[in-house]
Length: 330
Image (cartoon, rainbow, N blue to C red; front, side, top):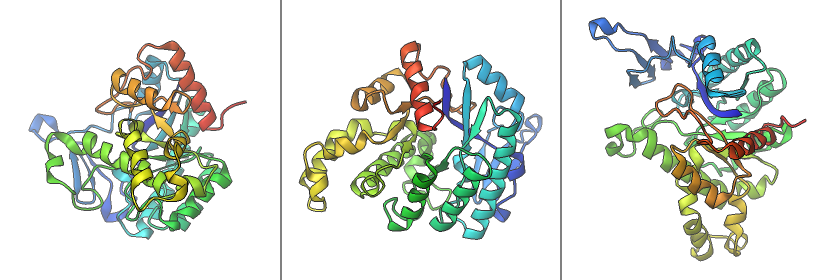
């Protein structure tokens, strides 16, 4: 099976965004000094990156063998999108990250592939770095956040979407925890790690609605987009989204047609890393199985051991879907 939800932390990228970091502090637990990972003013405490599958290639490959993952596609750590920093720093970090990622993939090319980090502050530079990452480094597409400082349907992003089509590569969206690039929208999310599960769900659902209602899929009919965690609450809200498009004054004639939103939802791809078999069943019931791919979030707090939850036929379908999405079919 191919795993399409797997983040990586790269040694060479530490400090590559200047004062913004990222900074890794290993700590000394014997003295009560816990490890932390700093990105700008945001500090994630208690996560051990070095000496884990996040940074250790041998540990990652051993985990892939244990989980039965044939190929894992590595993507940037959502903590380090740096979508809120200056363009120069973000561009330098993206270039450093992508070079390091390509070098890592080259150590195990039959087991690993990579998705590029992009400086989305400047869509033209993002498109340029995507071209470099694909043509020169061999990465398979790009992986960006959902909150980029402007709506995802902003015409400025059309040049990035067009570059994906030009290069024939997919584009993946995954949220960053609230509070990294801008103040937390709702301080209630600070409790119980709400940023990571409820905040992500909100961001993913908003991304899906923006891409559809904002006309991105209509302007770029050949663009393949995959949304993390099953698109948040999109499977549950699909009918409500369509009702809004049929009835609200901001809608267009095309979107208000019966089935228009449903047709566009079928164009999207969905990361199957949704938390459990009931959530996965809901996603499959809403959108079918032809555009869903497997993800584990290896070494993450919510790692999934078996993305298909024991269904061998579904595992095979996930694998076939991933090969289509990544253009790996022979």
